[in-house]
Length: 402
Image 1: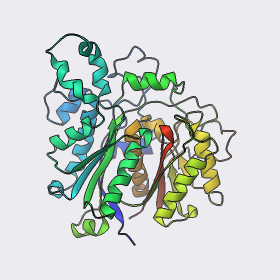
Image 2: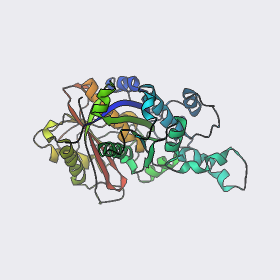
Image 3: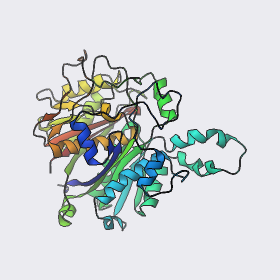
Image 4: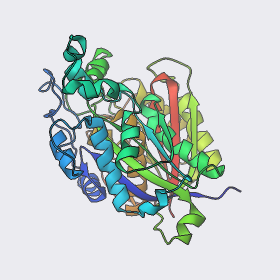
């Protein structure tokens, strides 16, 4: 049997704040981070609520002791660096000094948050200007490379972009590389910043709610977008024990599948989501009845919630665990969502609490189960975290009590 993979350090920033304590306090007190955007430059700012991080770009740069103003870093990179900084402060950085370490980052639209502001300059005949340094930042790997440079990391580096399941897939790749002896440790996670491109794009699909989103509610209208970054340190259990590290959780199971149904919609019968969760259970050596809580993908969109709900009903027919979506707290953070919600799942284990599904009032006709709506103290040994992306890219992760 392969040795268990464990989580020994984390770093996170979202609309709920910076760091573990801010996030725990917000979840426990049912305090969402949703508001009209202040930093996103859009004429629709007063039309939509978003999960925008409170810090401005200059404030993020100050947290990193970087020059404020035009420092060449996009907001995407700044969010990633701040989350990584927390992780680095909570572990021995000497662990990342050799080639037995990997950095696996996830992203969807790169530095679009900055590029879209400078697009007129790109189209001009100007040969000089601050905008020139941002030309290459549109690439999804921009934040990955800047993380490595800022923290002087020289590991195996990879960037994953599989829509909303991106950072969940990053965690899977890191675990597989460790289990196969390619590396000893990996920092895995993802980042995304709000941009007009994503807001307008999702709005054109008619699945953005102008009010706070209502996951699994019969009157749901669509998602709220958010931004943030989260990273987790993965290593073998024996290595963590040998160095006396605190083990936060066991990363015991995972699976990724593809619906092959539609570019932007899940298979409506829920078979894709059910298959993914079932394969993750097989990988973990667990039964459906062993799961105590599901951190659902729960985007509050018309198509996603009934498909995921049906999957939960089918797979857990004999014992349906508590489930909820935490996206009403943070908004949908796209590539960062898998890692942020993996963190929430680990936090549920550490606190022995189920996080409430905010804004739920009316049960859905398509399913006969309902999410948890209050903070619930229950014994939690095993948690599933779901991330289902465009293109049918489905991921389920399972975390267990250490």
